[in-house]
Every structure is written in C-alpha cells, then in structure tokens.
Image 1 (cartoon, rainbow, N blue to C red):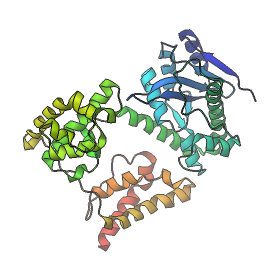
Image 2 (image 1 turned 45 degrees about the vertical axis):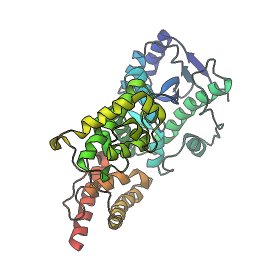
Image 3 (image 1 turned 180 degrees about the vertical axis):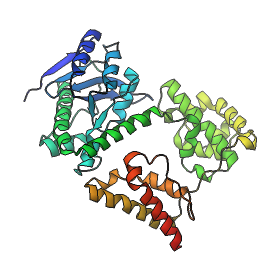
Image 4 (image 1 turned 90 degrees about the vertical axis):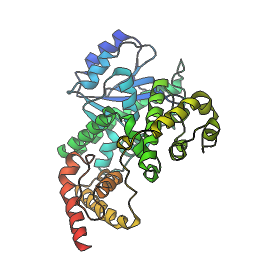
Length: 377
C-alpha cells in the first residue's frame, strides 16, 4: 500500500498543519537524528502521523518551532510515541517543549502483557502483522536529499505508529490507559528534572569505596566533565573518560606525567585540559571537612538478595493479578534504594522514585514485608 507522504519545509506550512493537528484526538510522532560526536542530538527529520497520512518535517529548513511546541503542550491531543526517551530530547532541544499527554506504545504493550521493552518492528509485527524492512537506523539523516529508502522508512514509522495506537488503546482498560499516561508524564518529568552536575559523583563507578575527602575531588571532576560536555556539545567521554574519574579522585595526581599514568586517560585530555584538571584536583583536595560530601553507602551485601527477592515477588504477584508485564512493576533500582534506606534492621523508607499508582498499590506491602522480615531475624 502506497503511503500518502506530505513534506513540510517552511514555517507557514508547519504552522498551518499544527493548527489542523490540534483538532485531532491524537497524533503519532517520531524523530530521526544524529548523535555521533555531539552531546545533544541533531534533528534530521520529524515525522507526524494522523492515522491516514505521513507528514515529514525538515528541521534543516524550518525556523519557527512555536506552533509545534503548542501542539506538544496541547492537553486535548494525545501524543503517541514509541520508546521515546531520545525523541523527547530531540523535541525538547528543537522546540523547548515536551509532549503532554504522552502515550508510549512500548509501555502500552507492557500493560497489555504483550512483552516488555518491545522494539518497534517487533510490536508492529505482533499487533499489525506487518514486517517492516530492516531499516535505516544507521543512515545519515542530515544528508540532503534523503534517499527514497530513508523517506519511505520514516513515513512508514509515522503511519504504523498511528495504527498501533488505534489498535492498542481500545484494548486498555481506562485504569491501565491512565497508568500509561502517568508513566508517560513521568518520562517527561525525568527529562525536566535535569540532574544537578554536583550530584553526578554519586553514580560514578566504585564511588562508595572513596573517603569523604576523595569524594570531594570526584564531585568536582564529575561536575566539570558534565558542564564541559554540555558547553562544548561533545560526548562526556570525549571530555574525560568515565574510567579515569575514580583513579583521579583516589590518587589525586599533582603533575602532568602522573596524570598521564592514570588508567584510560586520553592524551588529548592532557593536552587540552591537563593543567586545568590538576588545579581543579588541588582546589577540591584542599576543601575543609565541612564541605566534603557524606560517605556513600556500600552496595548491599549478598545476604540482602533473599530480601530483594521477596520484595520483587510482591511486584510479580501484582503483575500477575493485573495481567501486566512483571518488569513494569518494581524496578530493581527502586527496591535497592528502599533496602539501603534501613538495611539491615530498619526502619525503612519508601524512596521518592516510587511514585504514583505503584506507590499506592504496593508501597505499604513492601514496608510490611520488610517489617515482618525484621521480626524474624
């Protein structure tokens, strides 16, 4: 079946179409972008599907994104995307806005127990019985003109995404649909809660092994790396490699030759930023103790795995009851945070990241499980 494709290559055409789309109950959205040597994704194409046609917006020729921003924020129009965390970054960078309400078809598939974290092609095959061509995911979306294969690949995505929504939405109960939208809102909120660069040291590999004084150095290194990656629009590892952070904080080199001996230290980093990094390490190392970060908790001991299993079983039982993919219920990271809040003897505290319907339905059961485990020890 030939797809009806419409190109949008100027501001007035985009404004006109956005007005039309705002009269619809939903639009399907997809993006193609490049992100090889940059921190931020570069948009190569924006696709919109309305259930009948595919619209291809050329971001290299459009300048005024305000009409699309208004569509994204229109509460009356559902925005349908698939596995959309990177698409959200592209849209945010381009328009300054994020889609709301957001219906992610990958999440919807999980709530219908079709599978967890399903790729787009597999979901299209499963739900629509259509086998998509292997695709153009690795091609250059900034080249012009785009090849015929690229154009048809992009258009098919927009059309089938709309069809997926029309097929999946009626199968969801109103409650489950509300949860899909709630999870979509959480994805958007996560992107809005841009991480404070000064907090990134907490997630650095093996950070818990460092003393508080060493953590002060790690904190400054991680924060500098993040700010520079954003400012220079380069991948983080092009600024300073991940595996160099911990040994730098641990050994605190004072000379360029000592810096060069650090595992995974790129010669380019020493050339461009070596002197600055030595000064940064020196300043961070001289901070008074009251400015050191608190010690980080150690990873949970192996004995905690039995308890972790009991907590996970609560999510699995609820998933079975609701006929939802069990992986959608309680993320391992959330359960570990819960355990770390009071292990081994309690009291335990539900982490902030356990939100919404999951907290309502399972929060108390998790705390009760931990309380009864504590009584048995």
